[in-house]
Length: 364
Ligand code: PEP
Ligand code: MN
Image (cartoon, rainbow, N blue to C red; front, top):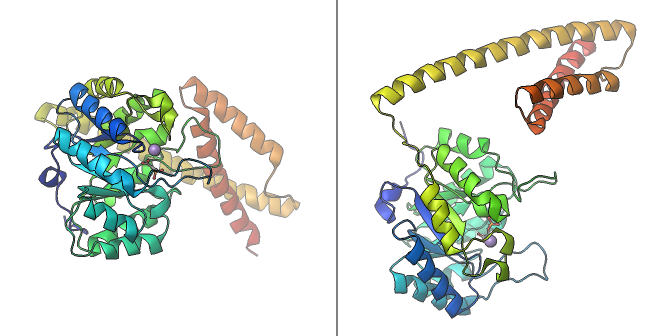
């Protein structure tokens, strides 16, 4: 396989070895005490399972009246807390001034936040300020579900010579109501993995879930997907946290989560391979069948298109569409499929069907 990026394996530049890389720490550094206490508790409860400490110093908040971070003054709090427990520390940087201050304070790794990854100008200026610097950089996905923009940021950092690189999947914001603060849309990091298997993917269940209750489930899903690590927000007193209070967990809870995670083997043993092979063959057959049926369905849509054209009927018949959705929802529900999935699936099928109908209707 020819690698597109020059990225060193995680095991070469982190303390994780072959286990998932775990980054933990508060959303924001709030004070010297809070940092030291949090980190000490994390190490006490999660001995050996946490490999890096995170803390936000400059916080990009959606609304200007929220807490926007303590700023530069907090850098030594973070660094010293890491030194006290012997773990590397990382902070978020959003511009070259942040990079300069973080490097000066001896911060060990950097991350680029979702609101920065959306801007190629900002990412490029960060990349330029890191030329010739050997420091690990983690790149969060952009807030919007744009895989190319995410990959573009990896390209910019890699081209600047950063080869200790990883991405952080923190979910995507959406106007739609959802149980998630940011929708996981797992298909996006999965596609990234398919195209660039050399890029390590860390999952951030905290910003994805937005509530404590979802952290375990999302962490396990990340592990089930075969991703390489987790970034989890942890605070000694989560309810009193100055930012993201609802989604932070205590160091005790963090330990429970990490201890109950099942880490799937990326490589299969001989017996496992056989079973998996059979199951995958069955899935492939079903996928073929789905495609064949969809082709047949679109063929019928074209016939309907010809009929509608001859009878001067509109392509979209609202009543008929409601009927289709209702039937599909009822049937899907019986088979255990979620309403959200059926609705999305049928919207796509319907769009394709309208495309086929208008294609034949526009033909003379
Ligand atoms: C954070 O990690 O605290 C943060 C601001 O995250 P994101 O960029 O994913 O919103
Ligand atoms: Mn946060």
